[in-house]
Image 1 (tube, rainbow, N blue to C red):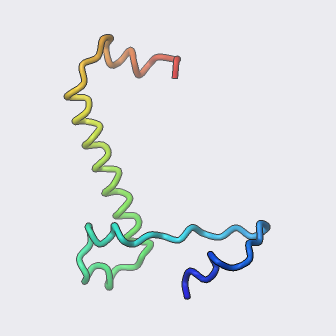
Image 2 (cartoon, rainbow, N blue to C red; image 1 turned 30 degrees about the vertical axis):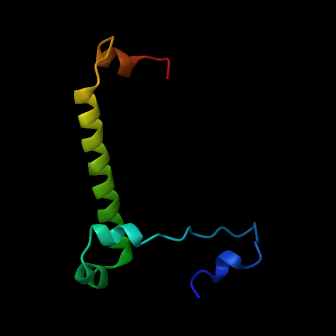
Length: 80
């Protein structure tokens, strides 16, 4: 079973990779792409798709938000 190692005795000296959740990939890839493309290649495309979506959301937020001071001043502020 692929998740057997999650329930096995924990050995803190050995680091394991996190289990990749493929559920959301099904919203981007069709069944043929899921079977014909390797998981590492899909992960790159999936991650790039998420980053593009986040960039789009940031752009929309900037359109809606009214700043009391210029946006450039907020970015260059050392208060972060």
